[in-house]
Amino acid sequence: MGTVVTLLALLTATPETMDSRVPAEELPLPPAGGAAGATAPTPLAEQLLLPTYSWDIVGGRLSISRGSGPHGPRLLEDSLTADGLVDLLAASPRAVELARDAHRDLQWGYALEYSGLLGALAGVVGISIGAAQITDGNAQVALSAAGGTLLLAGVVATVVGLVGINSGFARALDAVNAYNLDLLKNR
Image (cartoon, rainbow, N blue to C red; front, side, top):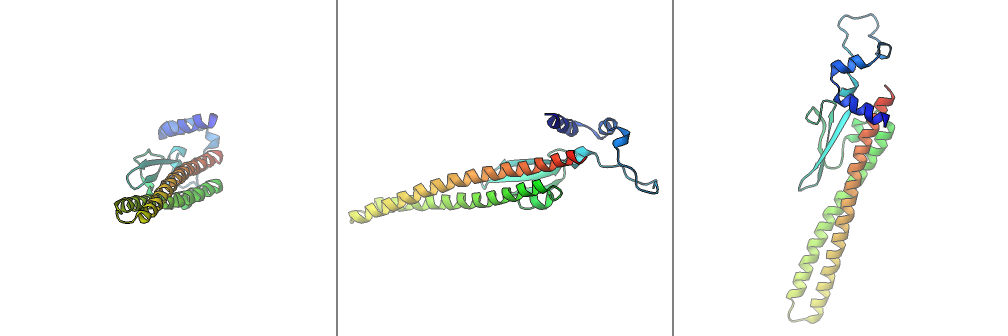
């Protein structure tokens, strides 16, 4: 619970209030030599990654921005399969593992979803052609049965694919959260 409160406080803090909350002994030391042009350390709130995702007709879209809100500079934009997330989270081994799992889940999820939709469409066509057979009763039954089987298999594959996609996006969000928690722990 304390980590969640700390994370929320960091996300809502401005750079001025961030600096006033950090005790002086915890601030990083300036570079050796005391260079007058030394830059101030980046506030933690600007280092955290903020994930967002949305759905459209093609599928889910994952976007990652850094610390300045969901409309800040995008580091990963509209990724269907979370491709590039592993490289973005390379500083955290646990986050990299979760990002790889997310990428794998999203790949097989989309493959099953689209192949299931094609199978269901082929099943509907088979049922329609079977129903149109007037002359041969055996062909009508065979085509309708094959079409029904394809339709059922397509629907099942689509549902399983959607489960994989939802699992993949959940793992991608978990990967970003693991990265942010590692940032907080290593602070």
